[in-house]
Image (cartoon, rainbow, N blue to C red; front, top):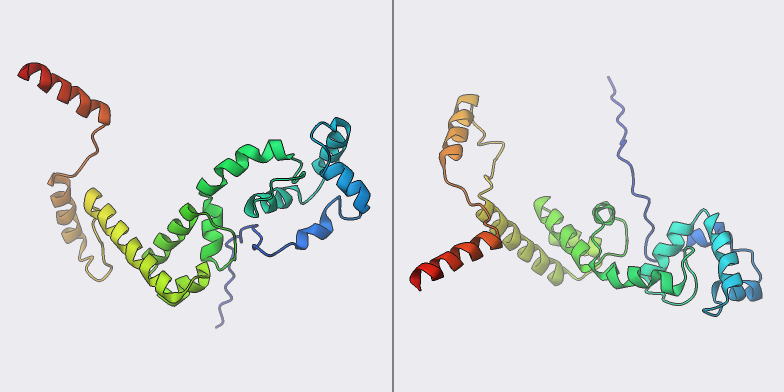
Length: 215
């Protein structure tokens, strides 16, 4: 008997850093150079040209790809994705702190996408939890092997600190035991005191009260 399996997991609709194949499907692809410069690289107060360019971009099938390309490559001049330089300024200011889990997942699947520092940290921690080797992480992030080893070591420390603070039990499939043993373990963990975060406001109030009593 033969079993045919299919992978129904959707692939993220993200393009690689050097992938500019979307240019050919843009509404502005067949424009003459002079017309393109007039519309997409116009003067700041050329309102008629800006309105015409935004109308053209509004019906463009690759508008999102165009906008993402401008952000990833830090292009701050001209109109990209239907947005002028002034329209994109807030996005450029926040792009360094972006944490898009679609990009993290795409990088874990082997896509060469543009990652911020936060997204690279997320990829590294996910790689550590998945027990990736240093060469595999180095290939995924396009870094050297020593750097990948350092990142995995730091991710291991971060995960260990997180689990130690929140007391996350490490469950092994081989040591799972019988259902009766699992129930006993659950009863022990419920009675054990666990850490909990105390808000800063509560700590401040207690401190003020203690100071008042001391005074």
